[in-house]
Image 1 (tube, helix red, strand yellow):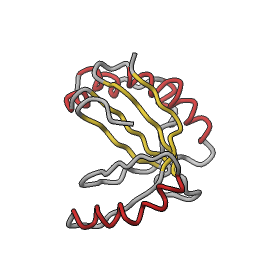
Image 2 (cartoon, one colour):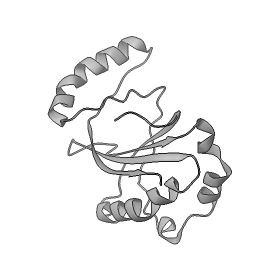
Image 3 (cartoon, one colour):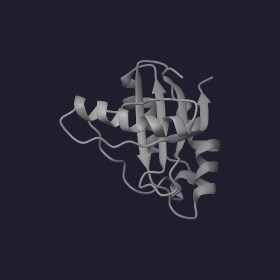
Length: 146
């Protein structure tokens, strides 16, 4: 699925053990619709890592009309005034890793992506001066702006 707009924000995170269902409800019912209500947000996607054990089991991708959307007054207002549900600590646990760049490869099956992963990592490693880390995630939820 091609990216919409001219900018995206990618986030990886852990999940507090025991709060997986509550996180899913909060993110689906409140958080993602709230973000997509900010002018310029075009699409939000939530992915789950296909490996049973992962330091970053949750991957979230927000697509926007342009980069300024991610520092817009509308988003800043939401960040500065979290809802009661957000305040309950239902946000994903663990820190987001820092990356120099992101290479997003989409496919139909996780087996095919697992098979392609060594080649993707080799290409990314050859194109950078650092190390490369890869993971396969399955789409768990997608929301488009109205």
